[in-house]
Image (tube, rainbow, N blue to C red; front, side, top):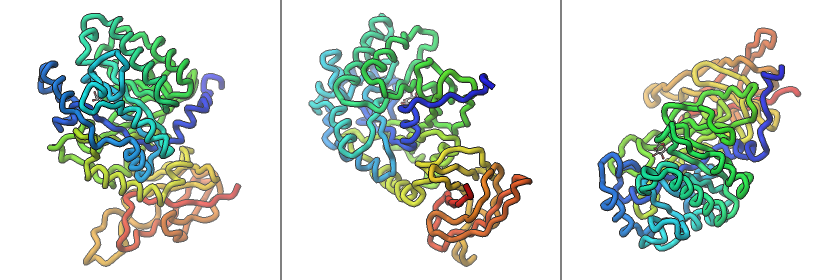
Length: 418
Ligand code: GLC
């Protein structure tokens, strides 16, 4: 039926979905205080005092190329960097729009240029986060139309000086929910100057996955488990992305001890892929632009997992296969099916292994094709299975991890009859 029709994604939106896993980076003046990106607001630092952080912002350790290489090691395909955050400070050369930018700091260079070039050299797609609210620019409060022009002019700079941009990630409209943000004009300009850029506008913590302006290409799930998108009868296909902090904060926090484990992060990545959403995992750079060692090591660890299970993450999509608990299946572009198994135990000796879950049969519904064989993707071990298509029953015998191994989430591939 027409009103149940699911629209086809535009090619650039499909391309975005295929990017799958990206790095979010929060970095700006606040990083020098190492207390998160909202520190100016939440500690009531007067504007003039906060602005002095610009005098010590040297960015001596920032390298777009090094960031892009790290993203690759993490198995990621894109990076979204805060070109300007709520404190109004721009990492790019605003070309006369404001002196609250990196070229007017001891850094003395356009850090977004460095970032975009570094990404391109490594085959990583650069995205720009841009705040829409502004704690620094007075016109945000005193003359909103003038402020919106300043916002558009700033985004125009980003559209015209850094080559092809993967997308724009706006954030802050929730600060003035009743204002006329003149989104038609902002997005219209982007469409003219960067026709293939993805347009996102963060709906915020309390409106996960909510549709916004018709030009928006992807909804956001901030810090939350994304739910499947109901696209039936929608005028266009909108993608989904979930962003998440690695610790407790987006901006670097030296007293942030609330880091998620690599296992938890891998589970979140899988939860995103389960519903076809991208996963945008955040790190906060330190004041100098250096990457914190724990964040770097965590990303590299995740990269190790991706290398083993790559096709299941990057070349597979939801097809209605559901298992028990968090388990699920995806349909691979190669015609295979991929089964994601959580809470799998280690096979070992009870003196040295702590059971972390079950071994044994894992059952899935929604397997429509006849399965020929099932094996673990990591070590190729063949797994016994049973299938009764008439009863929509499919199960395979999930053997435990060999001693010394634990992937957190393990993926089996099934060869099916065409
Ligand atoms: C929130 C916060 C902001 C952060 C963003 C990332 O909107 O205001 O600090 O950049 O989430 O999703």
